[in-house]
Image 1 (cartoon, rainbow, N blue to C red):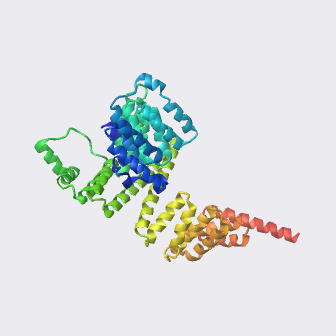
Image 2: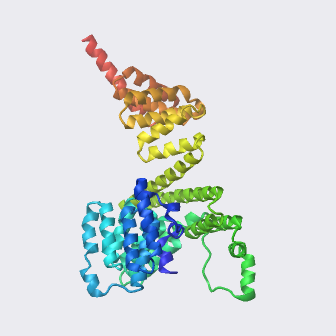
Image 3: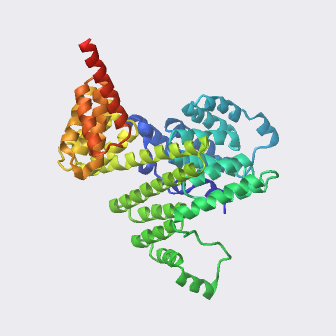
Length: 480
């Protein structure tokens, strides 16, 4: 397995050549987008003048550091200039990139890490310490594709370094690429004194891979490739080989790509599945139906990664595992927001997409935008009660308590026993907020109704006791 495939993960390989197809543009204004795109195209045309191309691509990365297409072009230009040369001992000794970036990373100044890191690796593209810190910055900024690019470059620069392989393995596992992660740990196992650590990690990854594949269906073994008649017989008995051959013969057969991606996903070869879907999209001419199929798959894989991380936390509740889980959750929510926002633009009359987008905006803590989205969906009678409940929680988060209470009341009045869990949640929210607003009668009403439905719901019994005690105290003071 090559260093490139081991470090990068599937998303990285699927990035299209044209940044207009993949870039988020980092919320840049149109004028800046135009300028960076011009720099990118100038650098591409000036490929023969590698120093000039590097400067153009560096401007692109500095202007939009989360754009994986720009970063790929920049790193490839550095490769063309420096080839396979590694930093010499003297160069590495005096390289200040890694040391300078560590201070910025310690202060969580992630954008500054990437800005200064670009200059550091321009001077020394084999500074794997700088590349690792830049990968960490990209990960913390929720740019997993760029994170993978930096890790690939670090692995190219220092393929036998223990920490480089650890970080590449962690990234590959978080992307569902367990074979790549295991290969990284195998390199670590060859380093004196690290064999036991590596074997533990490999054992855990093997379990995670089996869980991801489902019911023990794991990827096929390697083995020496067959040739001639043996290869034909193997292909006939191997549906993956059959589909690969079919695609080779009929490159425009979109169904073959999708079937192949299904089989690769079943075998937990998520990176290969992603590459296959990227090829399907290109072969279809960026067909909208194929694009949405790819989006649905990517969302499902994102959920799968989160589930694996949740299981790991259950088994080993460590700060590192919890941090990985939170990062994957945030990345997945961001991915969902991007997909659902695009679908809202494509289908402006579809309330389902607006509702799904509002739910993800709420999960990301963007309550103001979530409120706007929920309000657009509120007139949908099928969702009125649930949407009112979500609106109430959003208004409460931004401390608009009267608006929150009004929506909780709507939710309580609208939700039926067929939506019992939502109704209980609405009663609880209304009761707790009413108590916080010193409206004891309303709090008593909502929480008593909830207790009648489910006396064991959260801390409703304790809250009713407190309300009763407060009422009794008030009555005693009145009598006194």
